[in-house]
Each structure stands twice: as C-alpha cells, then as structure tokens.
Length: 54
Image: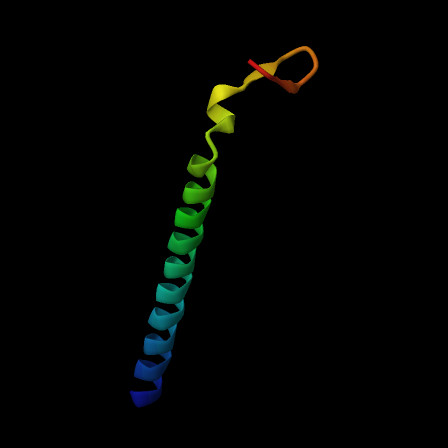
C-alpha cells in the first residue's frame, strides 16, 4: 500500500511540474509576443510575403 501511495504522489508531482512549466512558457511567450508592437503596425504584402513599412 505504501509503495502505491508513493508512486501516486510522484505521478501527481510530475503532472503538477509539467503543468506549471507549460503555464510559465505560455506566459513568457505572451509577454514576448505582445511586448513588440511591430507585428501590429506593419502590414503584410501578400504578393511578396514581406512586411511593408507604413
């Protein structure tokens, strides 16, 4: 019984760690993406696939 409880505890700890890492990576990506306003102001030229300077 004790070994099974220890294995369940380790599994819950690993799942919690993976969820927290996913949350941190998502927040950092969001901060990096929204901190640069250049992706909002520039238009994409569809014919050449380059950013236009407006």
